Structure formats: structure tokens, C-alpha cells
Length: 310
Image (cartoon, rainbow, N blue to C red):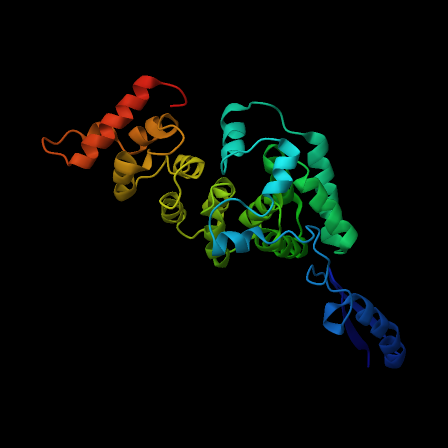
């Protein structure tokens, strides 16, 4: 009788046939032990690796415990830029007012390093990717990186990518690595990641990335974005409310006209969005309206008259 031996590899299942079961057992046992995590082989994992951020403490833990700036990598950032930006300001200005092109060389380098890490997790591959990610702002590169990943990842690599995203989002000590991790979770994550993302998003340095991720993986994206928007005030408010511009929820629309457009940067960034999304012209039609709506309408109109980003 033929013996069917199923050999479980890291990436596929192979079936071998032989008349000699002992020979097959000897031959494939070595492969199983070497290649299959179930038999103590080289399981893909980041847990045992030396963190590439050194002794810099976890940004996620800092936000969870303290919530506010300065972040653990503040000294590292000031040494590089010689400037101090408020949370989310650099990405906000870059995203709203810079119309440059993507960085194809950096995108290619990140993708190459990422694929190497997904194939083999060790200190070298993790360190190479981490160094590229924290080298400078990830914002100009993140969209083409994610697009390529979504189009080409295997199911196995998606599992590895999710582990990497969670690892960087919750443990990394440098903000660009946390942003990269959050963005990765946004394309391969699950609803169980929402609590972690929401904690990170309360710090406005990361709200843009969290809002984008939440919009992708939350079962009710509008409700999740609205809840996040109410916890932030400056660039985080701007980035989150912009993603509510298509809402048809009357409760969210009412909030946008009374409170949602207000932010600590410039009301002009959100005045037009909230006037349109909240249907200000319809909200003002009744003969009697509440004071909060009148105050909001006046401030929205003032912002529209002043012009600028609106």
C-alpha cells in the first residue's frame, strides 16, 4: 500500500509517495524540523530580535500612560530638524500644501527591505527596514508602499505583515516607525486592532495615520472617526473631520456645524467642508434654531470670508 506523506512547509503543502515508509520518514523528518514552525524550526517571529530603537521607550506606552508630548524620541527629532513642530503639524503642512512627487528610490528601498524581512526575520533585515523608515518623514512614501503591498502580498506574508505592523505600532521608539506600523495595520488589520489604534490616535502626531487605518478596518468607520475627532483639537481634528465629508448621518452633520469645524490651527481648513457636509443652508431654514448652531454658522461664515485653506 502506498504511503502518503504530507510535508508542511512554511509556504505550501507537498505530497510525496513512496513504497518505503521508513525512508520517507527519515528523509522528511529533517525537513519538517528545519522548515516547519510546528516542529521547532525557523518560525517567522520578531519577538526574540533585539529592538532596533535601542533604549528609546515605546511611544505607544507613553501615549497610553501620559497621552501628551514630548514623545520619547523628541531629542532625536530636534537633533535632526533643529526645529520643534506641534503634534501632526509637519505632516499636516506637508499633506495640505506640498505638491511634490513621490520618492521612487526610497519607495523601492523600503519595499525591498520589507520583502526581505517578510521572508526572513532577523536583526539584519529588521534593522535595515527600520533605518529606512525612520530616516525621514514617511508621509511622501507611504501611499505607494501600501499600494504595492496590497497588490502583491501572499496570504502568508499578510500574516507576517500584520505582526510587523502591530510590533512597530506598539513597541517602536521613533514616531515614523509607529506611523509606518499604524499604516500597515490599516491594510491588513482587524477590528480587534481598533482599541490600540484609537489610543495612538489621541496623540495628534499620529491621528492622520490612525484615521486612515480606522476608515479601512472599522466595522462602522464614520462612528469610529467621529469618536476620534472629538478627542483631538488641532491637526488631528482637521485630518479626521476631512474624512467625514461624505457623511449622511444627521447627528454627525449637526456636530460638524456646531463644533466639528473648530480647531486650534485655522477654522478655515474645515469651514467649507463642514458647511457642505452639514448642509448649513438647510440647517438654517427653520424660523427657530438653537444658539449653538447660530454661533457655529457665524464662525463658519467668518472663516469662509477670510478665505485661505477653506
